[in-house]
Structures are given as structure tokens and as C-alpha cells.
Image 1: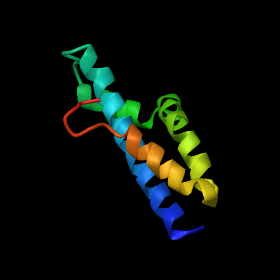
Image 2: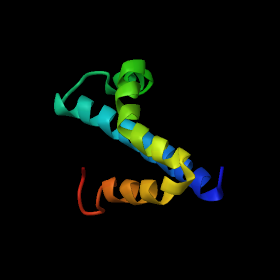
Image 3: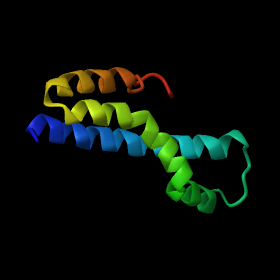
Image 4: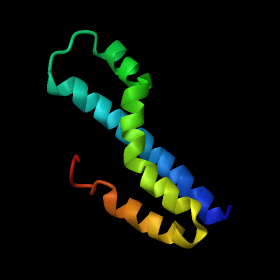
Amino acid sequence: MTDTQLLLFTLIETCERLQLERNALETLLVGAKVPGWKPAYERLSVDPEFRAGIHAKFQPLYDLTKREDQAQRALEELLRALPKPDKLN
């Protein structure tokens, strides 16, 4: 595996974790005034079904990154998909 591929995997995993945290928080906050939000957040963060849904969004990037000739494309797609600094989502 090339250095670029390793970097991409790290970047994708980081973005995936951020997306997981964001979605978990959004799910909790949409209902507003959720009592015991922290335990609920922690449960969502480790829920296999919730995690699988988030991971599925990133699987195509993992697949591209595994192919050395597609690593640049994966990076470009990831960077395009990241939220812009002035937007929340």
C-alpha cells in the first residue's frame, strides 16, 4: 500500500468518525430537550446498525482507495464531499 493510500484511509476514517458524531448529535437534537442526552449519544455512537449506515456512505471511497490507480480520484471525491467551512452540513 502506498503512502497516499495510507493517508487516504486515515483521512476517510477521520471523516467517517466526524460524520458519525454529527449524525448522532443531530438525531438527538432534532427532538430537542432529550433527557439524558449524553447516555443516548453514547449508545448511538456504538450502535452497530447506526455505525453501519454511516460506514456505508464511505464504502465507495474505501473501495477506490484500495485501487492504487484510483487513490487520487478518491481524495478528490472526499474533498468535494466535505462540508464547506461556512456551512453546517
